[in-house]
Length: 191
Image: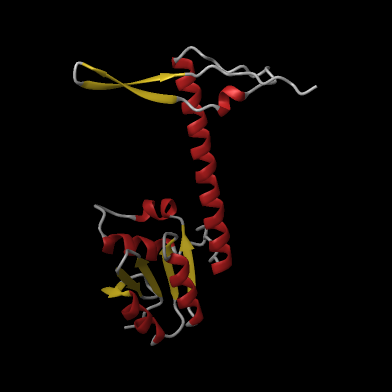
């Protein structure tokens, strides 16, 4: 059984593997755990291995590259046209094995731990910026509901600093929240 190309469909705990020979015929169809896969590939001569670029793919690609294999990651949208029929894990692995052999396929570079850490930091920062923007838009909407639009040309922007106070009013045994704005008091300037 001469395997020249492996297509690996990654998941959380199990990996579905399709092995192709030099003529493109399927010679291996197997399911492995992460540990079993690394043992299986360690006992093989150098082969071409393709996976989709997804969570955990960079770690596995680095481990397989250390074993001497030619590992290539592909974006999932580039693999999708090679799926022949209804989607399942073995068909996905077969599509990956076919796609990795194409000469015009675009591959994703394998990232180091430092690059992944930097990418994670940027993603967290982007999420915090999006949250901040959402909260500011919500505050602007709440102010508009109370007919107190912001005054961007005013030098005094203290209304933004004062929070909306919520008081509970009891009416007929039920509670209702109302929003109101407290008046801004001006402090006298020191002489």
